[in-house]
Image (cartoon, rainbow, N blue to C red; front, side, top):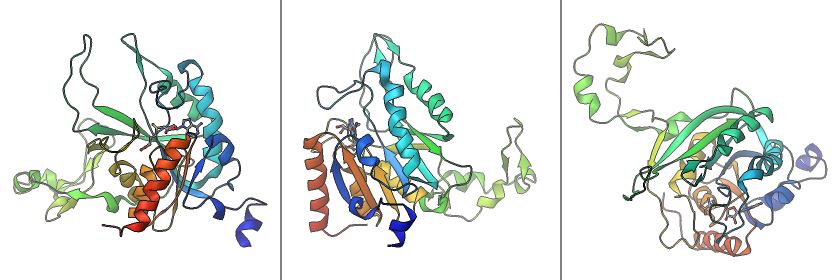
Length: 288
Ligand SMILES: C[S@@+](CC[C@H](N)C(=O)[O-])C[C@H]1O[C@@H](n2cnc3c(N)ncnc32)[C@H](O)[C@@H]1O
C-alpha cells in the first residue's frame, strides 16, 4: 500500500524476479520511478549479430539508445549505478565512433560518466587480421545519477599477491608517508598501509573468461561479469535490472548473490532460455 502511494498507480511487485518479453522501452514505462538499485546490461552492439537477434543500425544507434536510457534514468534510484557493457563495431577496417558519441549524449541526458571498467577476455584465442590484432577487451561504462552512490569496495577485494612480499619488506622512509604522486596526478599513497594485509582493492581491469559453450545465445557475458558489479554496487535484497537480458545471465548472478532481478528481452526464444535458466536455479541449491 505504502509502495503504491509513493509511486502513484505503478507498483514494482509484478516485475520482481521475472523475465519479461518485449521492447524494454515499453516495459520500463510500467515500472515505478526510482525503483531499481543497479542496471547492468549489454545491449545489441548495433547491427553486429542481426542474424541471431534484432540489431540496431549504426546511424540511428545513439537516438535509439537515448530513448531507452531516459527510462533507465527514471527507474534507477538516485544512489544507484548503471553499467553498460558495449563495444563499437569495426566496419571496412575502421572503428565506429558511435559509442564515443553515445557517452557524450548520455552526459547531455544528465548522467555522470563516473568510470570505465575494462573487461579483459582472458581466454581470447589468437587470430590474424590485416590491420589489427585480436580484440580481447570490452568496455563496461559506469554511469551514475549523482556524485555519491552506493559502492561496497570491500566486497570485491583481491588477494594482495606476491608483489607485497618483496616490495613491503624493503620500506623506505618515503614509503611510510602519505606522499603526493611525483606525476602530480592527485593520487596520494602510503605504501606501508598495506603491510600485513591479505587483501587489496582491485584495479578497474577485470580479467574474466568468456563463457559461450552450452549457452544457446550468440553473445552472453560470463556470470562473473554482472556478479562483480552486483557485489560492488548492491546489498542483499536489492533490485537489479537487465533490460537486454539475453540468456538470463544477470538473473543467474542475482540468484547466486541473494539479489532480486528484473530481466527484459524482446526475443521470445531468449526469454524462454532465460526463464528456463531461472527455473533451473530454483531446482538446484545455490553454490556460493
Ligand atoms: C548482447 S545481447 C545480451 C546478452 C546477455 N548479456 C547474456 O548474457 O545473455 C542483447 C540482447 O538484447 C535483446 N534486445 C534487442 N533489442 C531489444 C529491445 N529493444 N528490448 C529488449 N531486448 C532487446 C536481444 O534479443 C539480445 O538478446
